[in-house]
Image 1 (cartoon, helix red, strand yellow):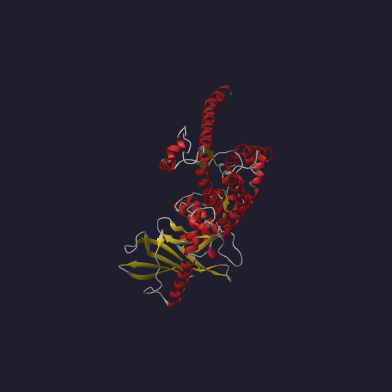
Image 2 (cartoon, rainbow, N blue to C red):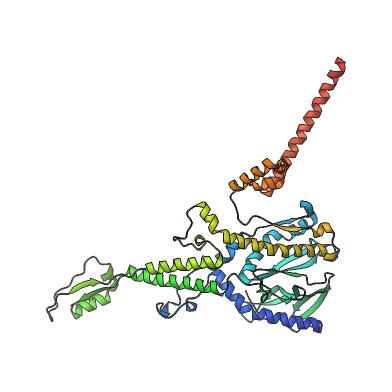
Amino acid sequence: MNLSKVPTQISGLPPAEQQMLSELVRVLEYHESKNRTKAKYYEGKIPLDEVNLGIALPQGMRGLEIGCAWGAKTVDVLAARSMFDGFVGINGANPEELNDIVSGNRLITEYKKACKDELKFGCTFATLSADKAIKCRIRFHSPQTAAALWDGEKGRISCGLAIIDAVEDESQSGTYKPSLVNLYTDDAIWVLSCREYTWTAERKPHKMGRPLMEPLIWNATSSKPLGRSRIKEPIRRLIQGYVRTIANATIGLEFSTAPQKYLMGITDDQYDAVINQKFKQYVGNIIASTVNPETGEKPSFGQLQQGSISPHVEMVRVLATQFSAATGLTVTDTGVVNDANPTSSDAILAQSQTLVSTAEELNAGNGDALKTIALMALAVANSTTVEKLTDEQKGIMAHFRNPAMPSIAATADAAIKIASARAEFASTDVFLEMIGFDQADIRRIKAQEQRARGLSLIDEIEMEDVEEPVDEANS
């Protein structure tokens, strides 16, 4: 979605906040083209004029479209291993109040989308606001519609901006103009709204002492505290090489399908007949020609050697191997078969170890961010600050599933071995999860077990009532 500029002069906005807004809009516009490029490579829409070296690929072939899913694979394969599973309270308790907020915001589902944006652009932003229905509203925004300024002294963002809503711009087809923008500061959320071409500001104070905005950051450095994209420049160069190679191979295959032939020593009339009916001469079973009466030369027929696409295939394999090394994906993920493809389950696990380690790093960083988001959500829901939350509320932590994604058989075997050493483990929900049951199945199992225990208890009571009169008569 193409967005027109966010205005920097808002009626009713104080000078300090006006300065913040201007700086945030500058940051948003500065990264706009870069983010659009990353999104384009993620979608696999790379035009040939970006990859053409001007040597083998004709300029007239710019309209040829070559799809490439490597950009999406770079993001999606890693994001699929970051499986946020909710929050766990102190001592393993179930934080019911927080779970209501998670459920109301569909946070587990929204996290999956936010994680892809985080890896695609380097970061994504979560914003919070009070909500009467679900106590606290949590929304995620990609860097295409949000921006923030980093405070190195405090180790967090100092202020942020998010485009909440936009309407179609009637003056430019396919372009949308922001109609509702939130400015996040340490003590308030400034709601900037546009009505009849006039922007106004409304202040909504809060007690948090920091912006109600938290980034999920991937691969941050001291020089780039808001992270770096997975689809960075070296990865885009490899994708360009793939697109260029496949385009050359496609053109080469066309020439291999229709190899060049030649006829020598023919007459002018025969030449005209061949030139005017090229396709008929190509598919015909018989090519006939008489002796050239002018030269007495017998016509000779021949065919030039067909070009081979084998060099192109080898180049794709080289690019796939380099891409695998640069991203941590397995060569199998690129869709290319070569000698580097694993041949056993152990080899597959060994080759994916880099990706698993990368996913663990992703989960660790996002786990801290999600905890901060959860604590602020609890504070907003209770109209207080994070510092005034109880120790039980502060003790929550984000839970992720195993990024190694082991098979159910392997996990069940490990669970049974643990249960043999710790008998109580077999009665926990974790044991049921490890042997392959999801939360819906676990609830059904627990309910039916409780029902079975209740029926058994009723049977015991009825048996005691029947036996007691017999005992009194005998006495």
